[in-house]
Image 1 (tube, helix red, strand yellow):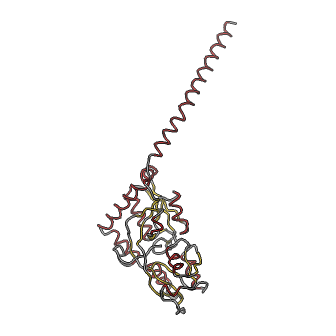
Image 2 (cartoon, helix red, strand yellow):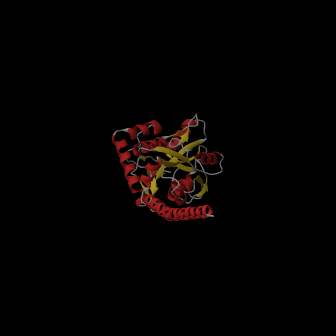
Image 3 (cartoon, helix red, strand yellow):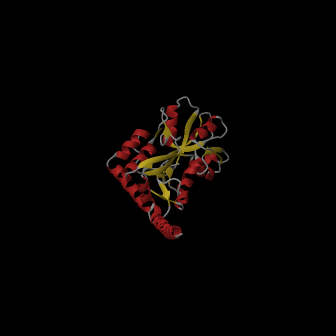
Length: 284
């Protein structure tokens, strides 16, 4: 009986110690978790990017020569090289997220993408929701029609006509302002095919993009029918203090690339001209 009593006493003591241990551990765990959460919340976007080791970049992958796939199906283009340059300057890797144009800015706003590199034009409307880098490319926009269409040469000629463009692009806004009916599309390929097939009368796009297409397709029935004012091309980030240090670093990297000639060399490589100096300009 004495042995049994001792055994029961020992068992009871162990149970009490275990209960105390679990109770203490359970009480401390939330405090540790809350502290870690607070520390994470105190880090801005740049700190989080550096901690994870990569920057997430939204791009279309179907808009040559800005962002497209080569004959080996590798993602290439001016904006692809620019994103890699920025990632190198930040000391991190780059993770590209290919998506339709109409999802790019919304994804930046929602925090799914850190930045967008896709020939984005700066506008007053976009500036209400996003902060912009300094401009890195300046290039004009053009009106594209079939060669057998002689009725469109200026923006005024678009009144009552139909155009094709991605819905949230500045080109779509420009056409709508000219009182054209805009047919929404998902990609440049869809846009140009609608014009070729006479399902719309025209489209607007960056001159360098159209010239690259016509060079690759010399037998195309399309032509540049006229020129229109464009915009400055920038990198958008989500508006607010959380993105401020990232934007400052991006501007530093862009300025260094501008000063040492890297930006101009990239422009000549992909656009066959140095478009990094102010001129009348265009974005997407």
